[in-house]
Each structure stands twice: as structure tokens, then as C-alpha cells.
Length: 151
Image (cartoon, rainbow, N blue to C red; front, side):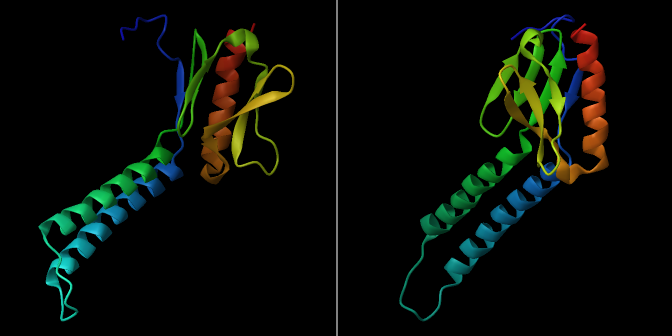
């Protein structure tokens, strides 16, 4: 897909802590399954025989689980001339500026909200409460950029 200067995002926001957690957990999953695979070959006196295919299967399971953990590193919010693009765990949607009513962070919520018409909203996983001050700064920047486009 080709992009030019008019479609480039003006602001891109991603969460910080959840990325660290997701990558750390993914590494632990792969290393843990690799270690268990190594232990399988060591065997014992139980009479059960594990072969190289069993070890490979354990490592593959670890990699698959790690890929699932890395889904939590996907969230992203992009603001640009075309509108607001929200990418959460499994989906990515773009909302044009004429349907964007604002950005809020309700008290007690884990994620910021993209406010839409008729009291609808979309959770923005890219701005998470667990990021603390970074989430506050990100929301302020998002509101500044949005104000420029919503005039």
C-alpha cells in the first residue's frame, strides 16, 4: 500500500507497559516449553518414551502460545487527515473525523474511549490506565491533534 504525505498519521500512540509484559511473557512461554521439551528427552524409569517429534511439538506449542501473548502488544491509535484508526487486539477500524465526538477516560476505566454518535464508544487499548502519567500525556496529545481536525 502506497502512502503519501496527506495520508501519513500525525500522531501514533501505543501502550508501554503491556508491550513489556507481553514480550516478557512470550519469552517465558517459549523458554519454558523448550525447557520442558528438553526434560522430556531426559526421560526416566516410567516406561514412557518421548522422541524428537514430541520435543518439537512442545516447542511449537510454546511458540503458538507466545504468539497469542503478543496480541496484547498490537494496540495502536493513529490520528491523521483521514480520521482516527483504532487497532485493538484483533481488529482495526478507521473512523472519519465527522463521526468522532471526542476522547474520554472515564473514572475507573482501564482504557480511554473514542466517543461516537448516539452514546456509542470504542475502547482504545493504546491508552491504558496501567501506563499512568504516560496515558494522561497521550490523551492530552490526542485531544490537541483532534481539536485541529475537528474545527
